Image 1 (tube, rainbow, N blue to C red):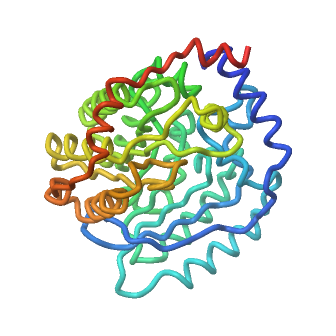
Image 2: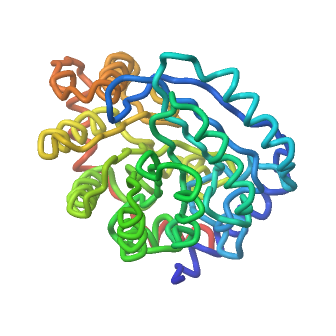
Image 3: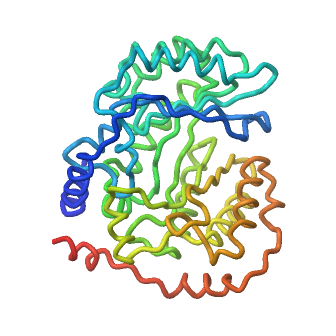
Length: 355
């Protein structure tokens, strides 16, 4: 995999120092939330499985420049406890008469056998298959783990048409993937994984990152729209816009603390959802903003934040773009427009600080 050696070395150094404070919790973090199923409104049962964490983040590359999920994973997972807890949670949280999406996340890749051995994957899928209320199962993975054997291991134990594989593509622009995010894969890898998933009869979800480091807000709007266009051509079923938020122990967090990065504007997210849903009405578009309204997440001036956050949440649940067109008046909208054309981000200047 090609990487940016300068960015990779910076990310690796930050990661090594931060991993010394790694959390050792082995509990499955879980919650139930409102969710937009393909069949309509429903619930999502979200589970964060305590694996060892993302192999890319643990590699010599240092992982992605923007992600700090690795710090929430234990160094030594307890698979027996994980399976026992998983069964108990499903039994407790899945209610009769309610439709669910089951999101089985690891803060890494579900299909990576270094995180979840094949036998553990099989046990988890088998247990989920027992519940008719679960209409869809969402599994996250980097594209390199989307192999024939990995997909066969799923299809052997559940109707694979229920399964959606979510890939953190972030951008269809290889320059951004390499020089901004240190992603470790490229657009062509996403395309190959997508076709492999679709050939097996499963669905694909693509995460797109809004406003990664070294990309201005204006340029990121354009990049995200271009990425959506390419993704739709592949027949991807769901697109999730992930507005950048600040994770501890990351390169981006250091830029943020040096006041060299501003998290995105909520106005931009509203604009993106309007544009995308208008052009591609059949796509399931998700915009669930982490840390919304705070300085470390997407925010406006503070006065209009809650109104836009509610609109984005309601749109995500009902997919009605009429909600997006609600007129919101706030003086900061003029400031946002001015910011779009004034913000300057220099890759080389920022990298020079760490040389």
